[in-house]
Image (cartoon, rainbow, N blue to C red; front, top):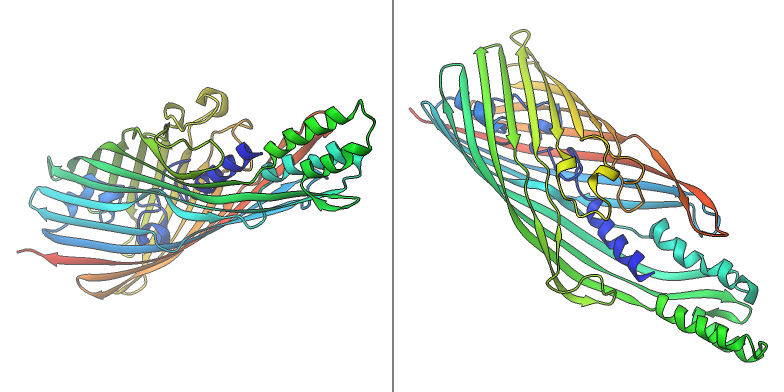
Length: 459
């Protein structure tokens, strides 16, 4: 049961990752993205992240983009195991601060860029009622001890965690011709996870009141036949160990580097294409443990937690002077990344993760632009990947918002994003005599974003 508790703590971190993007990668990296969802051919300031080669299309000058997103995710897990005290388990993931900072200096054929953002993780998770994988081992005490009159169980659990992978990016873009530009750069990734929680006071309801399982068996052992007493006392000793209180206070941290290249093709002032490739980020996280009552977080131990290589391709077309149409695709090379899973990737991932995006912008007035977008994500994991601790679901997202030009050189972006996850379910075999039961997964996600884009022309 201690091992289940530690796995649950890890789920806190896994659930906080990827608001938009692949299994480990965040791509919701600007307020403009939230309001439109298709920025892979962007020629604006957020091209630092989405289309860095396209930065050479900016006018000469210094550019700064500052934005923040507030992210709220609800998870619902339904389990049909009748031994559990509840069938629905809810979790909440919040990230009130999700900053995106970009800076560009463009002069003639060159553009120098900097970016700082949460490329992975970015939030904390809280589970007030636990999860089925935690409850099930405790609930199994009831049929195990039912011959001795046990009818119910209870426990106290608290756990929270946070996960944040910040990235600091530097790069140079160069215009080979009036139509073709290239980019080269890199991102330094700083990963930090925290685990805090406890599992304690596991008790069962007996004919003589609520008691710890081992204490109850020792209390009734003297009344049992002499031949059974050693078995009962031995079982009590085992249950003492399995139901002992456990506490965790640990951190994990590590650093990695992501090489990046890009290509931009702008054949006219109405049409352009942007391409970016991010190489794999090899990450090894090291434990820094204060308290580990589980034995699962030895101080100094290391685990792999790669971020996969990713290819993005986008195009934008100015259909009319007021209407801009854009689309994009993201392809994540999950099968080549080491996520630190117990099973190898070829057993749990059938296909690489992919996203398709479509967005429109319409200039209602010279100052006000309205936008909307749609994003489809298709996960490639199979049933062996799914459990209540870590599951990847396909999604459909809608983005709405706009941009208002406060002055000629100052733009305000506001965006709202709502994500609907496609539910999935698996069948879990709980062991001999406990049967197989269905477990299903649902999520929803909401993002509110606000940002400022600042331009300082250089003559």
